[in-house]
Image 1 (cartoon, one colour):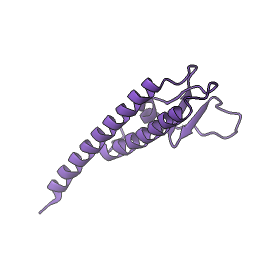
Image 2 (cartoon, one colour; image 1 turned 90 degrees about the vertical axis):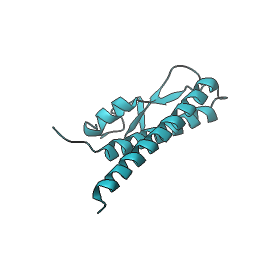
Image 3 (spheres, one colour; image 1 turned 120 degrees about the vertical axis):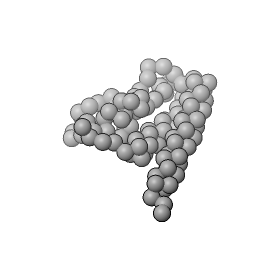
Image 4 (tube, rainbow, N blue to C red; image 1 turned 180 degrees about the horizontal axis):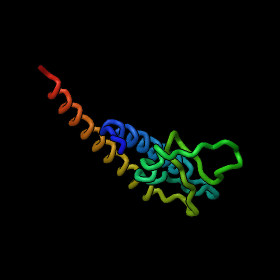
Length: 117
């Protein structure tokens, strides 16, 4: 069994949150475009599972229908952008980012306390 560092998970979560915020911002920016369909990121659980099982795009015609930002898959929806939903997602991203930062800082402080003489 492979061990996973809390800092590695926090880093992956920060990348996912960054990609999700960029996706939400893109949805908000294109809200007035009638033909634009909203985008969203794959769930964090799916992203975390894919970190070790990453598929590689070897041809532009393979794996169509998905895009990615870093290791985070971006999925196209069939519905138009709802500003209310996007603002809720943006608030969730902010809250999750603050939680990720607090947990990482706590573990960092605990680690420093164990190595201090």
